[in-house]
Image: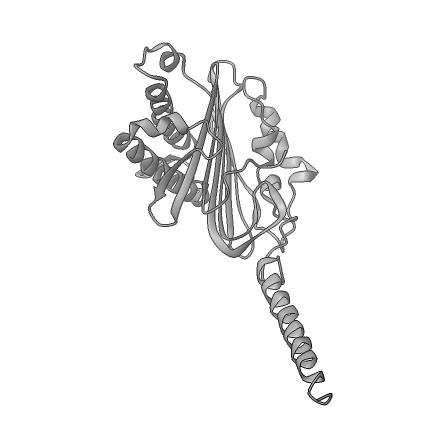
Length: 274
């Protein structure tokens, strides 16, 4: 009788060891490892530095250009390819890609053509293998997934603000439609149209195409279900269908003559840390 007692204990110990091994393997797949750039080196917050440093109605184009020399926005060659700076009379963009090609990002700042202070700012990032929550770098996502982040803060055109609308939902839908058009105009002013490019920056063009794809899905969703716009300012925002990545979510907050928009695809709808 006593001879049989150690067997369950041995089995339990073996099961515990197996569970620990499995947990270790799972942890290795979701934490940055040798095949993935550590999140601290290419964190979303670092990639969005030009966006974060820009304040609407006050930051000038010269101040945005000075970010290129900021030590906090420098990347080692083993982590990222050289960041590309693209400039026009009314816009400045920083675009980059990780050395392993898994992260592509764009910071685009558009300026008021008269005051030359920031009127709109955008941050876009495509992460081919997202492993962390955008707002909580220590919170790992399992399994890793292909995700998109897109943030924008912008001054709303006075014509949009002063036009009477039947409902607040209708006003927000028009703001989104206006922003989609403004974004495309800002990109065109920066690199030219696809048929007649003024500057050759494939990263800006590729990022812009993905943003326009998102806007298209959002506007189609609101056109079919206008009532959803009432949820734009909630914590969960509204859901839309991304053409290739599945579920996306959008939040829009409007305050006086400015607004802030947050879009996440396959990622939690949370803001970037500041």
